[in-house]
Length: 546
Image 1 (cartoon, rainbow, N blue to C red):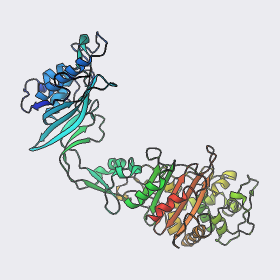
Image 2: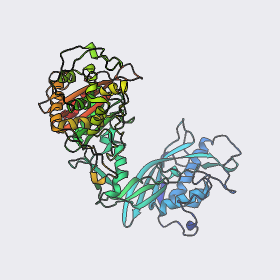
Image 3: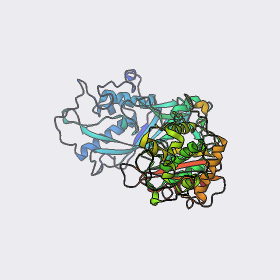
Image 4: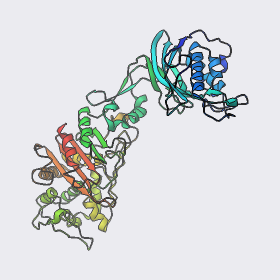
């Protein structure tokens, strides 16, 4: 479609700083929508948007009106430009504020032809200069306008805030000045800046941290910018920087290297999540889940953790007088107290098994048959030592642990991580960390001093129980179900595999938790099958990066 009046290739524009008269401008303000539509094309007695001719504007009408409007706007003839829209009063205020509040001192437009799919829309490039307090910088961006039929069928520009800039919505304002607060950089525990563009799983967490802690972090100076002041009071959106400020810095417990490894490890594994923590502090080192645009399976999952929970069950048995060498028969199909029978993976049987063997091979009935050793309260008491009966306050939204307890089949199901127990990879990473040190440190992603509300506390487990658990978790690597995936890890490492049956999938959820030195990690892959094959490689990759 040919463009008339030189619109196709010509540049429309002149410097208009100082060309606008003063009279009348005080009556128009972009902050107050003077038309009933609030800047979106509303009408009054003198502005009727219902056309008498409903046919789309012709190609010539579209190019002529676009050319006239952009020429008037760039030359500073705001009155003429506004009269070419379907909302003269609102557009007058907006175009005036473009100069007086956004401080645009010159503007030129380079239109492009309409397309066949949008024949009434004219895209254009804006080349402007913004001047504020002695600083002048160029500003270029793309926008567009649509031509519609207005009063009596006359072609006009359909006024929208987005004509000024595509980032503007109804109620938004374009402003140039000092931003309300300095930028806030999120840095890892080594001071490295973490850009959410580099870490897909942090795209929602980092903005949450900024909104929670921006006003609690000292330092930094605001910059001078052209920005969108949001009508919904959300954070301003920077469009152009005149003078850079100095960002404030929010220190987190994250580790950029481990986070990068975690992001890579979950790639290609749908409905998966992994979390890593520092066993000595509870600091969260990495959070990753797939898909990154979906549900946060790392921090907010609430699924049964399967046999990884046998760490807690083992702690209960150990603190009730058992040792790793205590007899614990592995009998497929066994039950207790006339309850339901339980199967073992691969129908395993070993009447001469001890607790350490049951743990390493993940024999369900080796634990079920010891239910009377701890009683119905013993399992929940042990869970409390691991902090699993408290609300957690980690510094960003998370799912709290849940070990409801119970009797009968619910009790025995909970002993092997089934029933109504709810956990996430963060929770099971913390369980592994407590097993490693004996102490419970509630996980957190920022300094304790920044977190509002109480931080969960728990007594932890005895050093003897911790020592026994380390032996048992190490045996899972040296001779048990974690031996393949954790091959090559040294003596200061331990693991536990898990699979959790669900009512919604033929395949169980795969779980895995492990520690190596001062780092513990856990992962889940929904419908992943055996944990050593699905979640195990994720955890191993994260630990190797630590």
